[in-house]
Each structure stands twice: as C-alpha cells, then as structure tokens.
Length: 134
Image 1 (cartoon, rainbow, N blue to C red):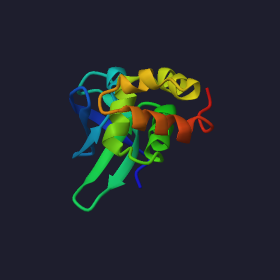
Image 2 (spheres, helix red, strand yellow):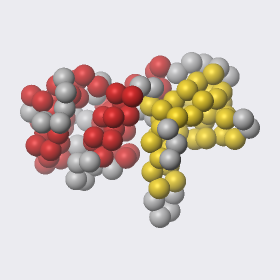
Image 3 (cartoon, rainbow, N blue to C red):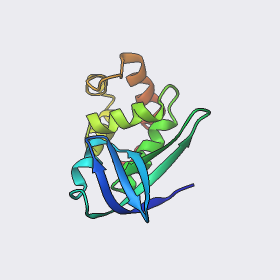
Image 4 (cartoon, rainbow, N blue to C red):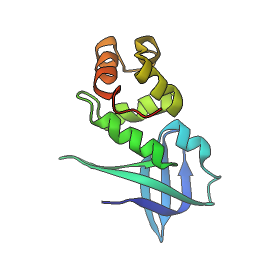
C-alpha cells in the first residue's frame, strides 16, 4: 500500500496528474480541490494516496490533505459509491460543503453533483450522517 508519493509534478490536467518519482512516472487521479493546490509542472510535490486494485487495473488516487483522503475513504464505504464517483463528489462539492450537505440531509445539494441521483444522495445521508464530524 502506498501512503504518499513525493517527486516532481511532470504532467497536470484538472483530474489527472503524473508525478515523477526517481524516474518512474506515477499517474494519479485527483479531485479538482487537490488539482487547484498543486504547484506548476516541474516543481516538487507530495500527495497522499489511496491505491485501488481491481481485476483489470491498479489505480492511484491522490489528495492534498488527510481530510480529503479520509472523506474519500468514507465515501467508498457507502454502497454504490466507487472510487471514480467518490472523486466526482469531492470535485463537485468542497469538503465543508459536502459535510454540511450530509449532516443537514440536503438531498438537493448532493444531487447537484453529476452522477448522484436522489436514491444515492439519500443513501449517502443515511449511511454517513452519524460518521461525519463537522
């Protein structure tokens, strides 16, 4: 399991980056909030990671803060939420906005995120309301 990667930011797009770690390019999927905090390409960067192993792929997800990574893992614990949808949720709502939406039971705020329907929003609220610390 990878905890973090530290190296040179080689490539950067809104949700996909490459970090050069001693000559090996690691591709990471990142939320928009992390992407906005990244330095320019060619600069040093350190990102916390979450490694997903599937039958057909190994995918690294990167985060600027522990809070982002923890919330990502919490989202993954909800039935029907996979890693890519969790990244979409983190990209669509700020961390505090997402926490408030879940704690307050705001279905409209959650369904405003692409890929989240009413049932998924309600499931997020039911399964995470007691586990979110605001």
